[in-house]
Image (tube, rainbow, N blue to C red; front, side):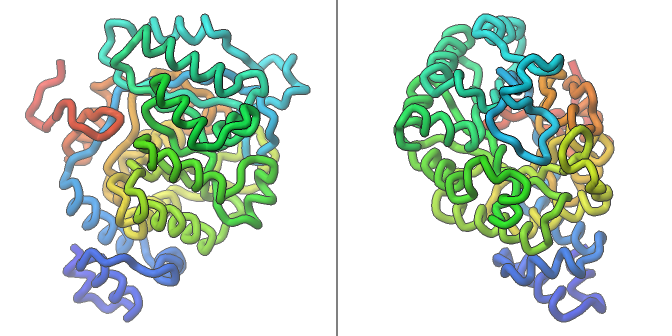
Length: 380
């Protein structure tokens, strides 16, 4: 397919990009923008799939995970967020604040099950500080020592460290010493400062987000990265975002996966903005796979875009569709995401991946392969 593109009648600029992809060379900022401006879906899919298959073949990863969201009460006021409740609204019917006991009980619900990861993120609550969470993780590890704890966005961490009067390194090391294993990628939104000022001006800056992840990588704590797309950002803003991540990855090699997150417009202060199409979703995944060539994995977060789009994305550079989740997150369902009760069984995930002739691979949080569910393999 890529050879066909190289031999086709496309513009000289697009052909140059295809040649760079073929030779595993990084494309430039301007070329990344051009992909959004002029790249047709078939062209982008062919390039992205070439990169995907060169890195992973038909392997498509998932893990067995669940989420814990300690609270949706938050000191910040992000315009796109449908999830958080400001402190003044604590009495609102859909605000919550889990106790430590509630959280430990959720962990205990999975005793004896082959779940490998708990994902802990939530609103930024001033009473839930760094020492509180360090102790929480320590106790979670005592209940389930084998469970990988992926926790806290850079937004949460910046606030925690500031309140605790600790450097990012001191705060992250404290969490690591108590059992935290990795960071999720949330809170990145769009790094372009002008856009950030408009949609989330009171949360951590782009520079702080990047510094926190770089610090985590330096102490041996890997992380993911996200990008919120489909709102007021430009094509240049998207490529600027990916470029900053690509540059950091060149320095640290600490990112496991890049996860584009689609803006959903229900129940938030940006509801007047129309959501982008599925075609645009697929273009974002494809351009990400082409541009961020040094990220090992591109993940489609299926609860956000739905199962069908996640399945389609496997032909546009995506090689990971997250995990089983077990209906344990409300962050995106409250914004009108496709999956209002996000849970898939192992069988459902495997069949979804097999449905497009890819090989389902159960992984752990660090992308070590646990089990292949090849086409001929029977499910238990």
